[in-house]
Image: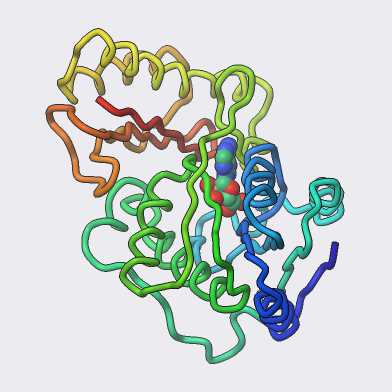
Length: 282
Ligand code: AMP
């Protein structure tokens, strides 16, 4: 497993691999890896000849009051997790190399897609995500890129970017990997104190309650949301940011549920912001 920090070296590696006819699978991450990330790597390994994993905590997607400085990082541990999976390259660029002085261009998806749900609470998030992912695509030159449904809005935004800007690659979205109690795995779970970690199980519980109601025939968005809020309120110190029930492909709000939907929520437990969602076909 090669660790490459130079952008030129990364592109050269990919060009050589493509020239040999290799399909390059790419898994972009911010590191501090867990089983959710590794599930993407395993799938990439199955479907591609060469697998590149990037580890880059992207400054441009963090707001000024967010957790960029304290975001968990442990390269040694990440490399030890990736090595047994047969990863070919870990791309590990420095921020000053990705964003040299004078780097001013960015990718911004217009319209409402990036302004609602998480975008309403983290205004710079998606502009940062689309810009870094576009840059990474241009450097790594993958044929397939793997993302997790855990970040449902990110998947929709990136699909739109790839389609509108004609990136010659396929986006693959894979299911959310969860802890035993249903909590979606996240690098940020490491911020939770033991009592907060226990409480965090209520997020998945509320999503399962919604699923149960839908199974029983409830189609009113308001009814489902209020039941979820009631469930979430069984735990103290939760600060709900949003619950949204939207069309899966467009993230359009739904009053009455039909077709493919996503139920997504974001909340804070103490100082830690967590997101989760489920996708259902009615
Ligand atoms: P991050 O390092 O948080 O930026 O995540 C890198 C990639 O891993 C993104 O495509 C995420 O959606 C995906 N990911 C993060 N957590 C999970 C999870 N629990 N299950 C599946 N994929 C995940």
